[in-house]
Length: 224
Image (tube, rainbow, N blue to C red; front, side, top):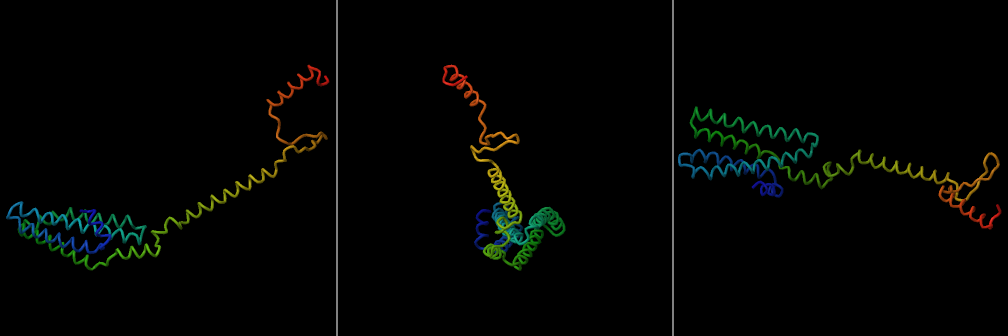
């Protein structure tokens, strides 16, 4: 039922699930104590009610912690860790306290005490404000959670570095192109000889040219 309860928390709110869940849990706990003399068949429906109420309150409280941590992203891990620590302490210490009460005052009174403690949680949840609307309002206003990736300083600096590097590469390519003399141009060496500054002839082309001139001299087309 957790998936169905999660959908309900996103549509109806976190607080209704928390309040209703603790009420159902209290009814189930007290009903378990009352139905104990009547066997397993009488206890089972109340235990299922306890499971449903616990799941409902835990889904609502987890969603509320997520809403509150959106307002303080740096403390998200601390808030969620503190919630899990409190739940773990309750699961560890509750049976020990219930056992002591059962030995001193009877088993039925231990269920009454657990139900009373659960109703105290209900009163505390009823006093807390709803956080679903606050999260929706923050998302509509463009809070930090919606603009975190779009306007981060590191993202802007990376884009500036990339554009700066691209500009330097383009300037360097332009200087190389400007300094390169045009194809077919000539210039004079310090000794006064004229030399071409175009693209040098590959070694293979030079050898084929010498072989062609040698063949022409052999047949008498060129002077020796």
